[in-house]
Image (cartoon, rainbow, N blue to C red; front, side, top):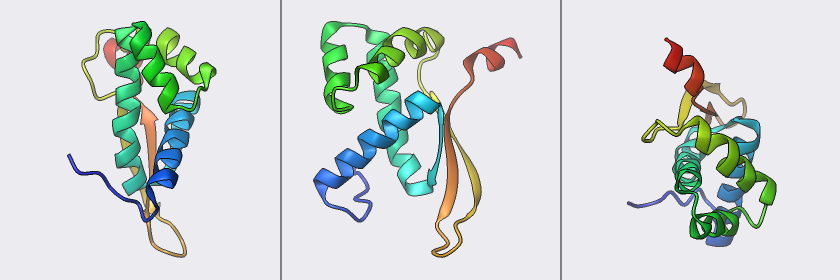
Length: 121
């Protein structure tokens, strides 16, 4: 599956995607451009899948991706893995906003799906 270059070099892109992934996990919602949100969504889903696996190898892969941020990995493995235990994927959703003033980039909110609220409906 091809990836989006996002107008930056490889090191900057990987760092930016890791940072945005950490922000989504910790805040459970971020506002960003549509292109970045679509790319970050893949990594957030992968991190939650690592958390659901729960093995030592999965924990180490998650730590390597988020630059050894143990707080983020603990939240994924202890909170999010339990919250999405019955869900098979699609842990995020994208809500479109209006265009950003200045360059007309389409802005979106990328947030984690509220599993408890949807299950009760």
